[in-house]
Amino acid sequence: MSFASSVKRIAVVGTGVIGSSWAAFYLARGFDVIAIDPAPNAEDALRRYVEREWPLLQQIGLSAGASRDRLAFTADLKQGLDGVDFVQENGPERPDFKARFFAQIDAYTPKTAILASSSSGLTMDVIQAECANPERCVIGHPFNPPHVIPLVEVVGGAKTSGQTIENAMQFYDAIGKKAIRLHKALPGHVANRLQAALYKEMLYLVQQGVLSVEDCDAAVSYGPGMRWGCMGQSLQWHLGGGTGGIHHFMEHLMDPLAGMMQALGTPDVDDALKRAIVDGVLKQAGDRPVAELADEENRVLIGLLALRKAHGLA
Ligand SMILES: NC(=O)c1ccc[n+]([C@@H]2O[C@H](COP(=O)([O-])OP(=O)(O)OC[C@H]3O[C@@H](n4cnc5c(N)ncnc54)[C@H](O)[C@@H]3O)[C@@H](O)[C@H]2O)c1
Figure 1: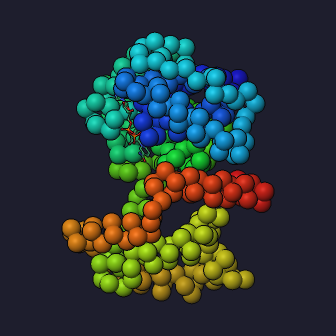
Figure 2 (figure 1 turned 90 degrees about the horizontal axis):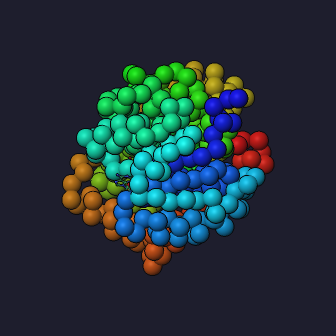
Figure 3 (figure 1 turned 60 degrees about the horizontal axis):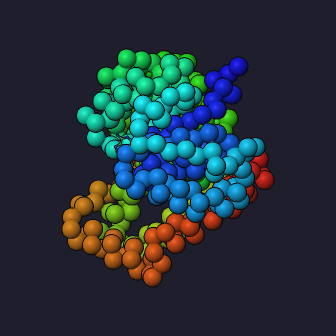
């Protein structure tokens, strides 16, 4: 039996922003989920979150056996990790805490389980440093919110085994995530770096008075952002090359593009720029609270996911 098909019970450790979303996702994929968090109101908050997001998950499509009743909760780490097949860790992002925390998780979890951390900012080398079984520890970094967005970045540390990485990739893919493997650990992994690269130029353009915050957002979401929801930038250039495809693009358009890269700017992220962004964002948001905007975005995203699937792009 493959590792992916052997997973029945998942521990979601830490049920804040990311852990709640992972818990809802794993329930929707038909797993038993044990959620673990010592915060006094954590169970209530998680159960309310799962209730609220369930209709959306139903629209995306539930796996056989999926049920909110399969969510269990405990504040006790040792008890929660007993008998689990996979751990998705989402605790606080402090290097000293995370390394000690992972060592504890490692000590309490059955040896056959994989321990995945959602950490955005720490490398697996740091996280696995104090573990007795570091070979089964891996980063499984989601893009927020993981119950809607498919991407998971998988990367190991120096002590992570190749088998663990392969098993984690297969597991995520088998349950409808889009796992990509990073062959080197980088601060911020990859998707957040790509986002930062784009945002650097957006800040520069706003600071230079080229356009407003609102129009800068529109330039992304009404333009290239619409295409990125369908295919990535390198494949887009194949289309941009017309009938000659990527060969034509490489011969005629890559050098001008490389020239434009040299002209990109570096913003000075000062208080005035931060204020301008805040003002521009609040103007766009109007009287819609954050939760309403998030619901709106999620509804559009599941429509996009359904369309991708219908066109064989899932
Ligand atoms: N927020 C994001 O957009 C995002 C995206 C991807 C990855 N991540 C990563 O996910 C992880 C969690 O981030 P978050 O934004 O959900 O943080 P958060 O502060 O919302 O949640 C952290 C949770 O951990 C719990 N916790 C604290 N001590 C614990 C313990 N001993 N055992 C179990 N739970 C404990 C807290 O009570 C809290 O509920 C971080 O590593 C972060 O880098 C966050």
